[in-house]
Structure formats: structure tokens, C-alpha cells
Image 1 (tube, helix red, strand yellow):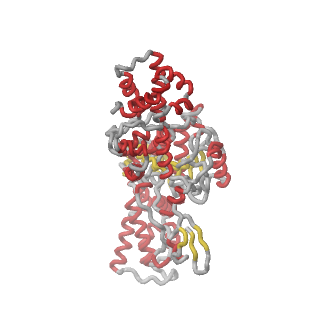
Image 2 (image 1 turned 90 degrees about the horizontal axis):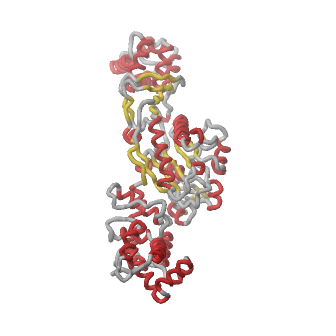
Length: 589
């Protein structure tokens, strides 16, 4: 965005906030959108791959009797113990107050499996050269947990189940020289996976980065846009290959969504203001103020609120320990006594700390005069990280986003409808003419599709249809061994897009039966040697579209010479047309 103010100050921002708009009196001069930058080739678009697990979607239960490691947020002390009651946790508590190592490992394993099976099936499988990937974690501790899962899951592909030294690393506030780490991630071949919280979320360019894995949800539109910006940078093919040797080009990046970040609206930030513009005291600070005699109505009411909150959220074990230290009263009762005193107006007015304030001191003295109880209260209030050692997670699904796939397919089918009379291949297919579609027709269609939307490549459109198809089986996945990069896949996509076929299946898969139909005509009598030559011609056509004598000569001169001997020079063109119609349509009209 570019803005002018009345003083002719120019402002540039990629993520405009309401404050920026207001500062420049909403005088927006230029609005260069992400969509326009993608169309111009300045940035690349995302493709969304969604991973869902049972716990990440629904939360879970730490069951009575399960082993948990409990880490105090207040003291840092940890202990392993048996859970003494069922504890429900929501997905928003996950990786903050509750850690389930199995859930993190399940996501990492699904991500690893997808790399060469679903996301980059055309790349040579080399675990030393996986696409550079950035994980977004919720906290520093969460980042460490993700790193441990990566070491375990990816370590399986290396000698002694151990990752190479710099393969996966943290880029966080506590991880060392962040500028050097970012530079290493940008340039070094051996640094494949980075895990961060916010340090790489904004303001850094790592152009070879091809995958973002969101393991934290984001509600801020501005921050979300900035985080996505880490993946959308373009890079020259040769520079990409310098750091990812099995890559060809970066035409898009993958946004791997493990938390539903792509599935809800985001909000623009608004300035935060506390009531009366004042900062609310923390419990620890409040207890210090009370201990120094600052027993105002506000401070007592704030303490009662804290005590009620702790009583509500604490587990029975922790409350029992706290009440044992308090001996004669519970924190719930202290809170009730404070609320009752104000409701019944039994407290003398508070003036300052120099007054005796005896009645007010009596209300909280069981807590205030007990140092051990105060420390335990602060520990419970700060909370614990519970690592659920025995809780197991299961994968629900891992696949491309249905919402994004539908957007692409809707756009593709609108293009087909709009151009059904303008583009020769589309005209033939739409009118269901049994005409051989040539290589040149298909290359023209391919070029125009890419010009309209550079994501309209056959394999990606096929994947979008497969994603929308679900489990019906109408869309047959492309075989990565011999059906990727086949030009005639365009024919099948168009026919399916026009609703002329009930299923989407590669012509390569139908080739055998269609070729047998061609050979089965009574006037065709081939020797075994001739049959093999004709099969090679048919296979070339099903790969590239119908060809002429000249096309075949230029592409496969040895095959052309053999074909001339079978069909003769005068009839070869006609026979190439006939073969094409059989391998495209299964019969000749």
C-alpha cells in the first residue's frame, strides 16, 4: 500500500492497519494486492495442505492413572506422577497447558509422508534435500517439542536414526544469534527445517523456502499475512537448485495447515486499553502491594477475583496442598469473606497505609502471613505444562484443502465454458467431435491455461478434482511412475470439466484396452514385430497427442522409418489419425 498525508509524507506497508489508514487520512494512492503480485510474477501463491488429528481437532482427556510430567510455569520444577482424575483439555490448551507428544509426532509424520507422495511426487526422493520448511510454533517450549518430534520422525531416514547436525534447528529468542541462523537457513544446503515462534514470522526473506507448517493458529489478519509472506517470495531456478538440488522451480509454496488457520476469518488489530487506562496488577505484584498495607477496595476485590479463578481452574491435588498450608481456611472462603464484607458494608473506609485497617487485614491474614501458601498460590495461578506421556493421537485426514480446490476448479470450469468456441481443442471436446486432437492443439491449450492462471497445470487441477471427489472413486489418482507430465491429461480434465465423462482417469490407464480395440479390427494383421512398432507409436500419441508424419519424423526418426515400412508413406498420416482416435475415444465414429 502507498499513502500520502496532507504533508506529502509517503508511507509504504504490506500489511496496513487501521492506525496506518487513519494517520494518512485514508488517502490510499496505490493498492497493489497479493493477487496482482502473483499475476505479475512478483510472488507465488500458496497451495493449502490440511492435516487433521483427533486431538488437534477435538482436544482430549488425560485419564485417571495415566503418567504425566508436570512442569511448573512459576518455578520450572518438574515431576512425573500418576494423574489422579480425568482432565479434559481443549484444542486451544494444546501445547500451552497440555502437551501431547503423540499429537505433535502424528502431525510431523503426516507432513513427512506427504512430501514425496503428495506434495512433490515428481522430485527425486532425497531426505537430505527435502523442500526448505518453516514450522510456526506457539511458544518456545512448543518449538522445542516440535524439534524433538522432527528428530525422531526424520531421523528414521538416516544412519543410526540420527539427523545430520544442522538439518533441523530452532530460530527463536533463546536459540542464539538469530541473524546468523536466518542467514544459514537461507543459504546452507544442510539446514532443511527451521522452527520459530515469531522471529521469522515477519520482516525476513528466505526465498528458497517452499513450505510453511502452521502448528499455531492466528487470529490477526496482519500477522497472518506477514507469516504467509515468508513463503511467497520468488527465486530464480538456478538459485533454488543451489540449495535444493532436486528442485526444478518455485511456482508456488505449500501452506501446511495443522490447526485450521486457513478455515476462519481473521481480524485487524485494535489498540488495547485497560479500564481507566490503568494496568491491572499481576497476582504476584498484588500480594506485594497488600503486604505493604495497600488494602484499598480495588486491591481486595482484585484478590478475591484471583482466588475465585484459581479455585475454579486448579486440580484437586493442588488445592489440597494449598489448603493444607492454609490449615484453617480455603481460598474460596477467603474470596467469599471479601465479597460479603463489601456487600454488607462492614469494612471501615480505606484512607491510606498509615491507618490500622485492622478489619481489612483480618480478611486476608491467613494467606498474607503464610509465605509457603502464597508461593503455592502463585504457582497454581501461573499454571503447569502437563506432558501427557501415555495419551495417543490418531490421524483423521491429510490432504489438500477442499475450499481452495473448489475455488480453483470453479475458476477452471468457468474458463472452459467461456472459451469453448475460441480454443480449438476445447471446441472439439465440447462438441464431442471424434477428431484427433493434435500435439499443437494441446500445447496451445496448455499455454493459454497457464497464461490465464499459472496454477492451471494438469497435475494440480487433477489433484483439485481428486480432493473434491473424496472417497467416491470417480477421480483416479495419477500414477507418479508414468502418468505425471502426460500432455493428454488435458483431454481428460476438459472432458471431466464439461461433465462429458463420469470419471477422471488418465488415457495412459485406458491405453491397453483402447489399443486392443484398434488392433482387433479384421483388416489389421500385424506380425509380432509390427505390433511392437505400432504400440510404440500409439504410446507416443497417448503421451503427446496426435502427430503428423513430419512430427513423428522430427521426434522419433527411427520409429518413423519403421512405420513407413508398415503403412507406406501415403497412408501413414491417415493411420496416425486413426490410432489417435482409438487411444483418445476408444472407437472411431
